[in-house]
Length: 133
Image 1 (cartoon, helix red, strand yellow):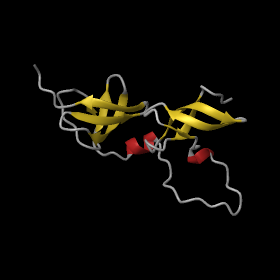
Image 2 (cartoon, helix red, strand yellow; image 1 turned 135 degrees about the horizontal axis):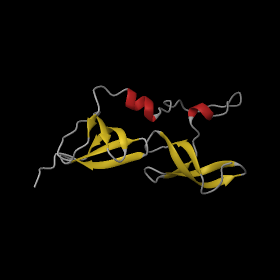
Image 3 (cartoon, one colour; image 1 turned 180 degrees about the vertical axis):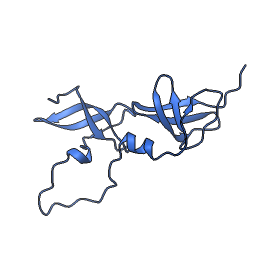
């Protein structure tokens, strides 16, 4: 049973992924406001596509891109996974194996010395290309 302070899977409007969210507000038994556990954005609850109820006849909405799961995003990346080391450099789309966070992929470059990597548990900023002292 979902309750305020509990967790639900929802489509994050900022991350554009189905991720775990903390319930902020409910109307009856339905969550209406949630906070993404990854990016901390507070937004209305958007149920994952697989659990949405059918719309009543005549109801219209703007077409949306279907929600893509983390596993599908990871599977779409080509090439072998590379072990994460701060001394290595990574490119957008590279698959990374991290000793703490597990397997993920580079989703953004944040300058020459940092990359944003999306893991199952969230998005992390990691150092790259660090020269040994």
